[in-house]
Image (cartoon, rainbow, N blue to C red):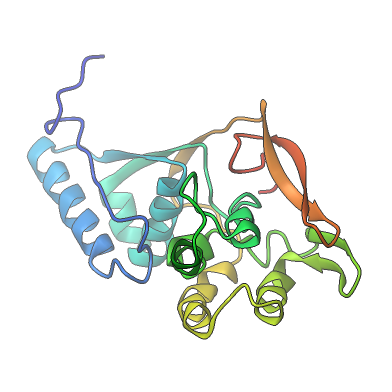
Length: 219
């Protein structure tokens, strides 16, 4: 089928560096866009999110809108390379103090470690409650997903400012997995290496199947 941009194929952008605490108007903007598309076409919309965009869509549907509103306006959702409940890969930004391919400097490390979007990608405490993220540490033994925050604080990976930012995000990490009230399609990659955990005091990365950033294991 041929789609026409801004008619039956509509893009929605957001500042994912600041999401979720730095984007307070995000859900209301998305709501308005969906309602306009619904009014103009007379049809429910299908939402498509990629990577971190899947996190946005899930939060929008389950936390931002009522179930009756969702069922009235949304036909379904497609999640590509989903990051519903976090990934082990973003912990690398804390361990290395480096974001993506940016040069490591004191400033870039400080900024990286207080990005709310990276905090939101910590492994969900419920879905990954028994998942060991850091193993064989001489002082701590094994650190599971719900213990990572305290481990980072004790070892200086989170400054006071970064910790205040994290506290604004942590509530989303405590959410229990829940079925969406609409039909959905999940597309994920398990054919590439992705970090699943770290071993030893030097934080040797352990790899498993995934899409380079997110592991394919988990809910």
